[in-house]
Structures are given as C-alpha cells and as structure tokens.
Image (tube, rainbow, N blue to C red; front, side, top):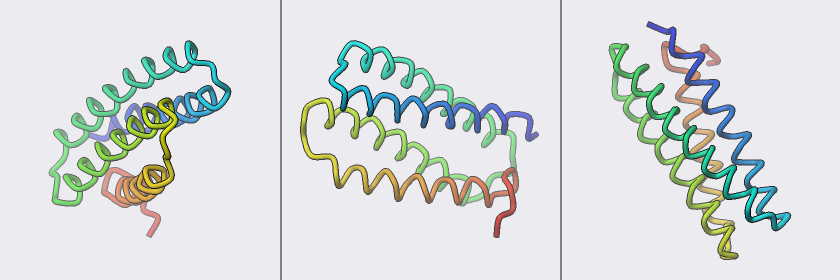
Length: 120
C-alpha cells in the first residue's frame, strides 16, 4: 500500500524547509520567530514518524526498512540537537556533519527501497 508515500515525502520535505528557515532565523537573531518555527517543525517530526510507521506497517519490511527507520529517527534527532546547540551559541560543526551523512543515508535507503524510486 503505497498511498502514504506521498504524505511521508511531503512531510519530510516541509520539515527540511522549516529546518533551514529555523537555522536562518537563529542566525538573524530572531528568537521569537525561531521558537514558533521550531514548534511547527516538531509537529512535522511527529507527522514524519507517523507516516513512516504507516509505510513500515503496510509493507513486508526487511532489515533495510528498519535501518532506514532508525537512521530517519537519527536525522530528526540531529536536526533537533543542531538547532538547540546553535541557539545556545555552541559549536555545531560535528553535528552538522553527522546530520548531512545521516540525511544522505536515509535518502539513499528511502529511494532505493521497493516503495521508493529505483535510482540504482
């Protein structure tokens, strides 16, 4: 049942856009707007997890599906830690690197699994 695939992709695309907006608002020093965007972003984290669970639940999943789920949760965690460290003025270089690597891995796994697009 691939009907939830579009909902899942839409939620993580919107979440990445909101994440970039939150980072730019932090850089601009707009704390109130950043807080609002972070709250909306957290709602999208929940939507990502729910739609991902529905996709996982409606397939004959394998170890790759579970790995993608775990890495996806890691991406969400890295996004949240990156925003928290940036708002406190702490260095974010290592977390940004981890986020980029996890994002590439989850995108590769997501698009190469049976419900995704066959790139390779």
